[in-house]
Image (cartoon, rainbow, N blue to C red; front, top):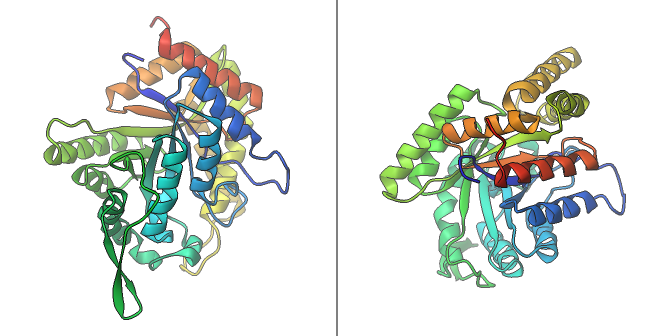
Length: 346
């Protein structure tokens, strides 16, 4: 994979269509295929209270199923919304999956972005970022087997979590959408970064990666920071075929995403009109297909991968469940695997 970022697979957008017995089968089979093809990792998200992403309420549960079906590929949460959970519970669940997978897990920690999710919260919605940052060291301490004090009523209790994980240190990413402060905090705390184009342009991404690497180097001289970028991905024999394959799925994906992001809540923001949603969805779908995605023929995709490596991206997490047909997902992964071992002439 010389000259291009490492490649992994990302699940993020599958909609829950009802009580279908095999609705998780595509995730299981795609992960097994990714492992056979040599992909580095598979990423699974945490989503709540909406059909868009409704298959992913608990990444640890799905990760356990993937651990039982695989033997090599890393299994990562993208992300655990830490303010929604007691940190000791997170340590317990993922140590269990670490054991089931023989030490293959990794966690990206997020602060959350939907107010409605915080019916599960350990803190107020407005305090979510501070809670996340305050909890990172506690998670690391529990993972190392240290006793930690937690309040129970009017006095603290000291606990040590089990099972003992196989990895001596939990591999951590911070999920950073656009704010430079999160990129800087990830570097300061020695975390990897998981990011995307969802709320940032390429120039902003370049700037934020620079901020992250500078902060990381100041904390960990000589150690290697790691930037993972999630991108919508479709590779076909020709760029025209790839563009045709993603046109309708990307539009549907963006429409569903805007519906999720615009859910009614008590925050006081005015909801988008249907016309505004349609306009934004079409604009975003076009951007992802032509500028922000990994969409095209092998040569075009290889050029894009070289570009991403050049701006400091270490790993590309290929989002494939945004509506492509199963055969298109398979073709995409096979062609990407071929690029990783036999780069196309530029």
